Each structure stands twice: as C-alpha cells, then as structure tokens.
Figure (tube, rainbow, N blue to C red):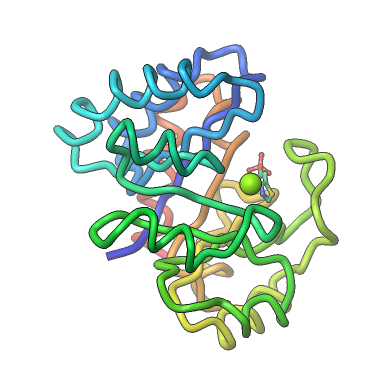
Length: 203
Ligand code: TZP
Ligand code: MG
C-alpha cells in the first residue's frame, strides 16, 4: 500500500529533524522522507541508522531524498528523486527490489513518462509554497487530476497542502498527500499528522 500521509522533514524548522520524524511516525504517517540538501552523507547516514528501528517499530517507511548511496548503505526503506536526479531505472537497478523508489513529477508529460521501477510519484506542487522557493509552476487540483489519470503508478500530492485538503486530493485521484510545513511547523507535529490522517480517512 502507498499512502496516505507522507511527511517530509525540514531542517529549517525549529523542531529538530529527528523529532519531526518521530512525531510524524507516532501520528500515523505512512512514510517519512528525510530531505536535507545541506547535511553530509555521514550525517544523513547516522540519522537513518538511528531512526530506522524506531520507524520499523511503528511500520513507517523511512525514505531518503536524493542520496541513493546513503539510502542503500544505511538500509533505508526507499529513496525519492527528482527529475534532475538521474534515471529512475538506474536507481531501481542500484536499489534492487523491496525498497521504494519515488519520483517527483511536475507536469503531465513527466507523468506520462514515468518509467518502470518507480513505485509512486510525488505530484506537484499543487499550490505555490514558500517551503521550496525554486518550485515548478503549481499544477492546481485540475492539473493534479490530469497527472493522476496519466501516471502509471500511485500519486502522492505535494505542495501547499494542509488539513482540509484530503477530499479534493482524493477526488483528483491522489492516494495520499505529502506535507512539510503542515507538520514540521505545527505547534504539535504528532497531533497535526494524526489530524491529517483522520481527515484523509473521513474524506
Ligand atoms: N516539492 C514540491 S513542493 C515541496 C517539495 C519538497 C515543498 C512542500 O512543502 P509544504 O510546506 O508542504 O508546502
Ligand atoms: Mg532531488
């Protein structure tokens, strides 16, 4: 199963990344993605090693953004790459089976070209977001629906999403939602994750 709640960590939040991950897991996230463009491979590796048993105990997948070799050496549950991060088929070959490969998709044509070996796509941004200043033009809910219809794999929506969005995202064909600020900037990240999950289930 893929989804529904996918929390992406943010080193710029006041909450330490490790606590963001723990809170998301306790709150019922399906997956936590460690996304830190500045961390060294060694730092990221150590973080994955520390978090993996905790995540496994809660049946939460721990996914590493960008760093395929760190994901492999640390034994992470998967890796998430963008359009500019190389051929997903090569990542799949390097990872073997049994681990997740996620791919960011920003346009309909990218959705049509998702290659075999990709398990899910992160589609968006649905809305503009300050969390990723260099993001592609927002696709909106209609764009998301087009991407979901064209993609050969399950779609996790991302970008500017918050509590209350589940129904519209489901209607657009997404199997889940990825959030950064809705959890990592929340006063209570665990409660925020749980609320997103309940909202998704009730939508
Ligand atoms: N990729 C597309 S939008 C985005 C990423 C990593 C950031 C989403 O952050 P937020 O705070 O949930 O809008
Ligand atoms: Mg990337």
